[in-house]
Amino acid sequence: MTEKNPPSRPLGYARVSTYGQTLDAQLEQLRAAGCAKIYREKATGARPDRRELLKLLKALAPGDVVVLPGDTPLVRPATLAALVRRHRATDAAATLLTAVLDDPGGYDRVVRGKDGGVERVVYDTEVDGEERAIDEVATTIHCFHHGVLAPALRRLQPVGPRLEHSLTGIYAVLHDAGYRVESLQVSDPMEAAGVNDRAQLSVAEAELRARINERWMRRGVTMWDPEQTYVDASVRLAEDVVLGPGVVLQGDCVVGAGAEIGPGVVLQGDCVVGAGAEVGPGCHLVDTEVGDAAVVMQTMASGARIGPRSTVGPFVALGSGAEVAPGAVVPAFSQLPAGGATPGPPGG
Image (tube, rainbow, N blue to C red; front, side, top):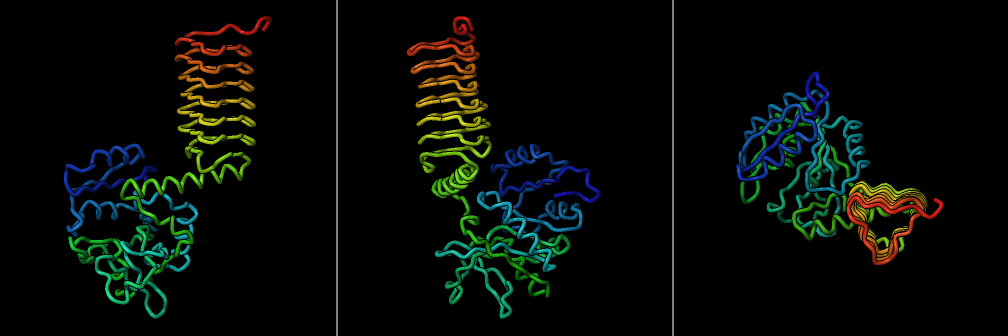
């Protein structure tokens, strides 16, 4: 969100129902995002007057406002771009991202008029009669024209057993006022999946992991068992890298071209594996550098440097700051203490 005559820094908004909730965590995240100003307030879902939110909307520059939830991690950037394009191409006051589900229970239903446009969104607990057969549901992703948002918010009516004000109620308000209301149906319903408990979180993690792995395999990375390979989104892999089953790459790890990461290897933090290196099986490295063409087997290391063409292991422990010289050999069942170093090969 940007301000009128913006200072090139975003604005933030934080709301809690009670002061015992996560206000501090929200503020921390908004500050980390570089917000120039943060509007905050204590307001339950049943309270219609959000003074600080309205102040924020007033401070925004004219244009479009995209609303995203914090619990829908699988929506793709391309889908958001398509939503905004649809919104602008149709000159709509509001555009809703929808999905068709085999089991729409628990979701708000999209009710369309005779012209096929969105007429209203029915809150899940108020779905009745023929509405139960509707399989198109509303996501919590919206695009609004800035000028209509604040007035529409003021006209929301409470819904549900707790008489809360739902943002999806805006569509009926705008439709009844004669504004154009549009929608975009997402092709992959998983993009609309929310995360409300640990079971849903595991499903979302599996989907995200599958996307990450597919992307790397299409770029030339070999995975022996993609379903048992865990690669963080921040990891960087070069072409022709090979990952064995049970590999876990976390943090900002970088793996060079042609390197092989064997079964059960865990790399964490800022690990760097050089081109053509072989790591594994059974290694656990944290913030460790492995040089080009080095061979490391069943080794534990943290903050160590392993030189190019060196051989380490199996069953070796390297302490923090330990350095293995290029071409050196660290034999099996040995330990290099913190800050220790190995000599290079004879004549090296």
